[in-house]
Image 1: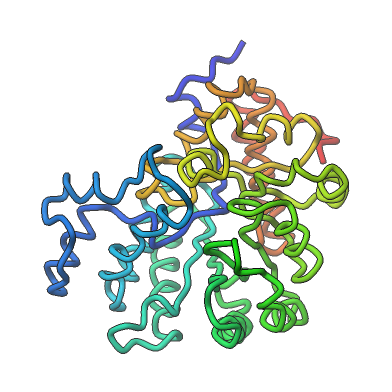
Image 2 (image 1 turned 45 degrees about the vertical axis):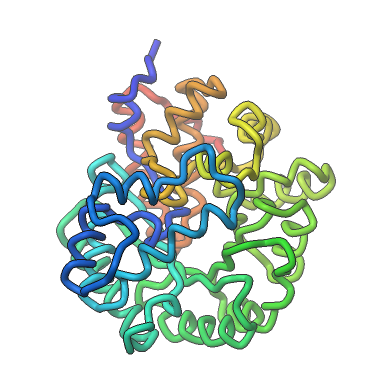
Length: 352
């Protein structure tokens, strides 16, 4: 019988689909960049700054959770800082055997000191390329718009996404506060994305109800749903998501911190998995949520009693739900399957 120790889970190949660049920086890097750029931080000591940025379980809401991004974005306004943050995030992921990583961010948040959105994106893509050359990892970039943006900004970001298709950018996302900021307001941007055959993922059903998920799927054609904790409120929509194999990018710690769910006990990941939904496990924001992907898998094991047999299929769900081209995805799945089987986790050939 395989024991799911932290060391064992850490060693397993993993995929991370929902990871925000500006929420996953190293605190030491933030303090160094702030000094270089003459940026004033709320706390000058790295230990104090770490406590300030890590929201903890006492966080009151999604809006409260998002405040820390003002600090991280304040030092991500140069090409060098964007390159460094991207490379270091990949390095941190490789350390815990993440073989595939999708990094998401909104270029519009990084132009306060005169950079253009293309220069911002190029810097991140250079960081990605260097990391892929140095490490055993495949990385894709997902461009985010935010719900509170003017729809014209979303359209500009969608145009950027189209321009960089097949150049390292794999998808388009809509993030940010859900309530009073409906996804359908951004349908023109998503129309452009969809008509250029680009993948879409939408934060939905996190801080608002199942209607938000319905809108994400049927108004702007989301291929994956970020979080989706409120999906269980509508059985018909839940069955639609299951029948169409629409993956959920679940982030257990973050979901409790933002009050998408009240407590770990209330999290729906176990229910979703049991009825067959393609759930994936992710960090959301490694720094702000004070987590790693290994931490999130251990939560699934300790809080929801996932067995070795079940964990291996959640891991494969991550690779299966990747936005990379199919021929590359197959190679990643085969490599991950071989690694899992070498560790005694045998895979059913009919697994869908």
